[in-house]
Length: 253
Image 1 (spheres, rainbow, N blue to C red):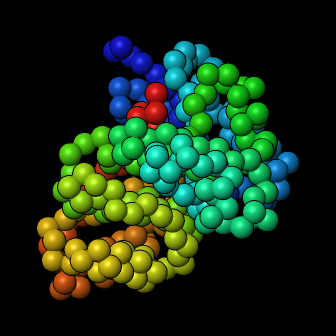
Image 2 (image 1 turned 120 degrees about the vertical axis):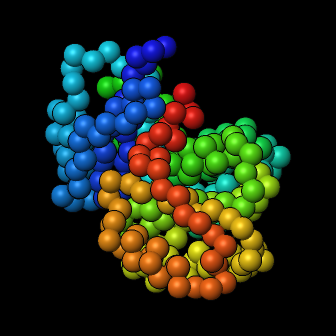
């Protein structure tokens, strides 16, 4: 459809972004940082941000990417033989489950993402957009990576204080995880450790940077500058596609 319109939301614990996707072209309509972490105040900030949505547009698709660091990706056979609670509790304590557990099937990689999501979030958006598709951000990232033939690739989805790392080689998923960070040296440490642990130091690979609206662009530039000084990883090149995180939401509709 020539003029197909999609309204794409991204929600983290720190911010909320509204974007419009028309023929794979992204326009950010609004981005707000939360004034507080309480449910009530987050809802207020989201409702205020939604005032930027053009009421005259006829959107055909609605998607929400939920960003959190507590998720686990498991092979489909393991998921089928267990339960979401058992899988999640293997990686996180049961006491840590303060909301609802959900999952996304990623057929491209024969795997499933199990994650925690706030109880209020689904009802809040479904009431307003009954056809909305809610997915975890790592699921969108994995689909976009695994749907194509790839050799050695690292994908970094960078937010304000966490980043998701996906590592693939010859279209095989080797790692999908989330890490906390405070500066570019943390990024350097986790990425280099990941490459070394998988014995890929001298591989010819590509590092894809996926930046969110809340990413610290100066920090990312510092990471890139320091990375280029490490001789062992000179065979890796960088690629950064604007609004790649938002475009990944196209894979779930």
